[in-house]
Length: 526
Ligand code: FAD
Image (cartoon, rainbow, N blue to C red):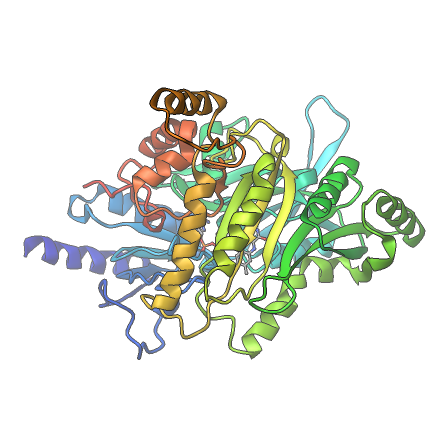
């Protein structure tokens, strides 16, 4: 009773102090079907529409100081030993990562928008780097619109641009440009972060570097990103956007890798599609883009690239579009899905980074699993190679341990029918398929040593064992991207040798485990 009373007093104090809160009487209950519009309606869900957690409060900060004040109050108040705080960007996570059950959600979008272009001289060099300082709650489409006014743009993107700067930098931010420039987290020069203790810290490779590397790909665990300094390049005007279909997976991936080796295209992705919905007739599409200002030069590059691929040039479909339309290409799909009531549906998504030598096996596992079920295959399946050495391994983002520099991004972005509500057998079926794929794909690959032991055992016991080959059996050593685990054990395996450092950074920057509870990595400490 006293703690409840104190709790209410504390909330009243915060409300009074900031005048920025909206408060709710909802608790942890299933989503009522008659949920009326309220300031909380969109904070209890996300793009996934699979997990619904009710916060008790929402903060609409105007400045990093508002966030700092909240976190300082919470961490110093003995009566608030169970309050958690989730930063929420655009809420485009799929498994509740930006939610806080019975906690506080901070709407990062409400920070006063800030986009400012600048230039720094590099030490011991005549060159300078042009950058944009963008607020953590700013959308990438807003960054693009603003920087284009100056003929500039960031180099590394996500496919969809209505995501916040802080949200994608807390994961990695990847698309077809990453093979050339690395993910978005590899294109950041400096951050402002409000730590779980409420300290406002500026960090970079040189200054407070542990927080800088920790926060990039850090899943919101160490602090809230309120500003990022992002490298810019001169923006091209137009794009030759090319698509080539393949029937053969080996030729398709060989050409994807050939494009990486050539390094001439500015963007490279690939897709697996079905000739008819739910049919096992599969084809593959290679997609690449050449940016340009001079049509003649672009045509020469395109001809040269096409001449070095397995496929015949005659089947390539080439579209000429503006740079803006190319980067914003998913928007048209969004509008069409919205019109048909197919945007706000459950999204049981699966994203993995797969070692190069396992990609064919992964494709077989994926197709067997999803085609062996009765569930819909609606939604893109993306498969493209990218390069490990464009990532900074000091950052929190996790990559496969395999030695090869090339690894594949595999994204199974399925939409469930609107009737597949949480808890329904239909949604469970999607999630079970994902789980089956995750279990095989993320398990450690069988080593030669293990195989020798299997052989020796079979000889000793005279068991008539078939002889699995290392590359055909066992795990694949893949890592989840935008991972979802139910408990800490899953996370420990995910981080592998990075776990110790991740845990240590958490104890330094958010010792009470207040931040980003929706990731389910750490339990709030009293
Ligand atoms: P939210 O969902 O709001 O938050 C994500 C996580 O980050 C949460 O844990 C949250 O607490 C934390 N967080 C949010 N803001 C901050 C902050 N300022 N500081 C610290 N932590 C914070 N990803 C790619 O890499 N490439 C793609 O091409 C791509 N395409 C997508 C297309 C669509 C249609 C969708 C829905 C998602 C796509 N994503 C892609 C995934 C997307 O990058 C992540 O889901 C990202 O987290 C979304 O950003 P957000 O602003 O919605 O973050």
